[in-house]
Image (cartoon, rainbow, N blue to C red; front, side):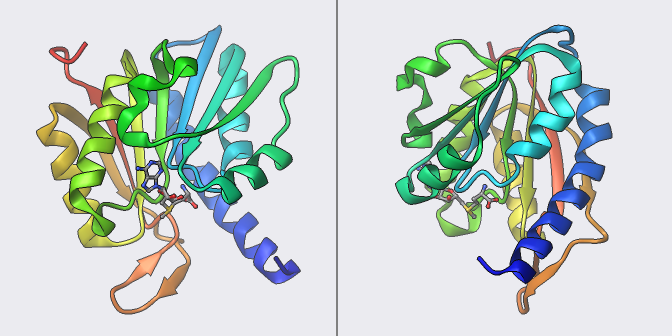
Length: 201
Ligand SMILES: C[S@@+](CC[C@H](N)C(=O)[O-])C[C@H]1O[C@@H](n2cnc3c(N)ncnc32)[C@H](O)[C@@H]1O
């Protein structure tokens, strides 16, 4: 990756952090405890540092898990993000439609992020991924998605609501960097937060 590309990625992450920080801190209820965060369909997990910066001040210890089916990207993540005594990183090669089979995720997570969820690319698969994510979300947890496209974001929200999750808020990133047109595709173009319905345990 060249220096210009790295600068662009860092700018994107700075914007994501500005938007995510108040959304997460105002809506997360667990504090001063071990916080478990799942970065689902994480790819290279570029946003791992942002997650740590937001969550570490809220937690006595922090566990960040990443799950994806692309081993090359997971290797990059594993080499880049190193655990320390307060925050552990664990990148797991696994199908996100079957999270219940992952031993490390036996305990539910307080926050689950799907950055650039990919509903557009396969509605059936992503419906299963959302259901699997909600199954691994703690009753007081929050699910966060970001999307590249307007239409894909709306479809993802509908699909997640059909699984009985409550939409807390959806916002548009007005500083989102355009990467492809048409359809208008931009980095973290939309962000939505969900809580788990009381009838999903
Ligand atoms: C649009 S990319 C987003 C990657 C990363 N979150 C980001 O924002 O750069 C979608 C990711 O979903 C992953 N993915 C697709 N189907 C999956 C599945 N069944 N289980 C786990 N990951 C999956 C892909 O490998 C890819 O990394």
